[in-house]
Image 1 (cartoon, rainbow, N blue to C red):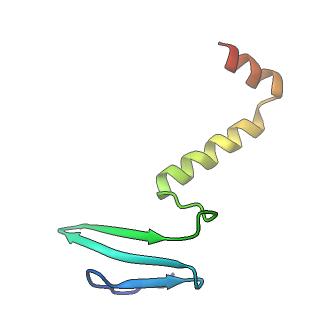
Image 2: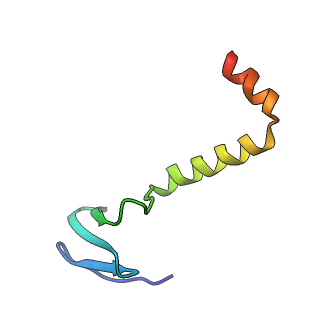
Length: 72
């Protein structure tokens, strides 16, 4: 993992097309802004993990079980 220090209004560039900017710092909370192409998905980690878990659960159920769940 790369750890960088940034101050308010300073940025980091990732892969030449993603800019991460520190917008605000209040106590132990940091507000960041991310400028990236529309085709680059950006998720909070907890949301990403939930999506992954739901996708895995969906692949573990048969099509008939999924259809039955939808009809309930």
